[in-house]
Length: 400
Image (cartoon, rainbow, N blue to C red; front, side, top):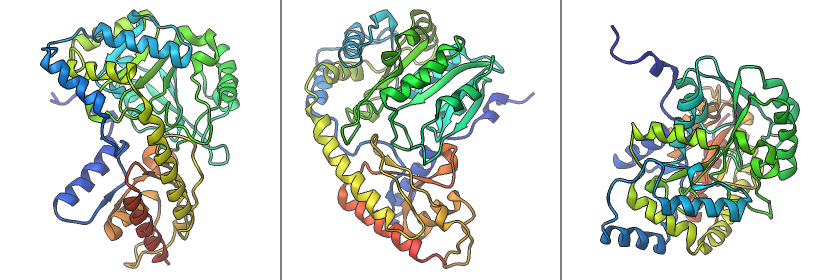
């Protein structure tokens, strides 16, 4: 009898986590490495949020919480959904988890059976298909194109849906591309979904506030209220509030789904850190002026990185309107040889070449389901990004 469960063979370690870990190990060994693989802001958590956590500890708010989350945080989340998205979720429709990833894990574990299909537009965050696979589901990958700004069309969605389809995952703004669906584009997708009542929608809105160039955010239950009863709207504190390590994600959805997710949580982690939850209350209810100022910096960094990558031989990079990633094409370097005479056969070969020769850690496009591309996070200081892009330019120029 095998000791490890067979379901583990269905999944792989997170590519983004693995590459970031490798770059950190190289740094610890004294090597000069610039890590562009991790998706977290380089800004500190705002002071007033830190102070709320400290105050909570001083007041003894360090006990277990209910699996669903402390009432004060669920009320703050409910108010946020109403205020910013026009969505009415009562506190019994709110789940609080240890990050957005656990929201997805709990939702899929509660609902996905063997053979159920989960539609995942590509490129995608690496976790979506693997969590479907872990629960016996079948990811149905729908490839977008750079010409369509990495967004799927209603016709593509219609073609992908079958009687076995249980979920559609929508991530806007998107990791890894930074693309975002407009309200009109979401409305067009919703018209398809209205014809298929068996399909639920997981809207991953974690990058909601990271939009540039006047882009307007929208989420699908807001755009099409008829989908409200089969939509799970996911968000969290990590990106907009610079709270990646605090591990607070949340979602609003139908009562029965939220109950099932909270039941699972009661038998796993019990609850998200109580201290982190009190910090999240302050984040949602308190001053949020840091978001606009951070976004100004992110936009400047985006423009710098896009410009410098487009000056690199063999690379082309579009200008994303959200998140803090770019997803450049490396099609122009495929087939070329390194100074060591190794042929660059694919995007994974290219990012390995960047790491080994110039000490730049990026993530290959295959990990996100669409090649030949690679992902770079520009959530680093301008000086570091400029150095990294110069290294990439140098590496590309050395190929023959």
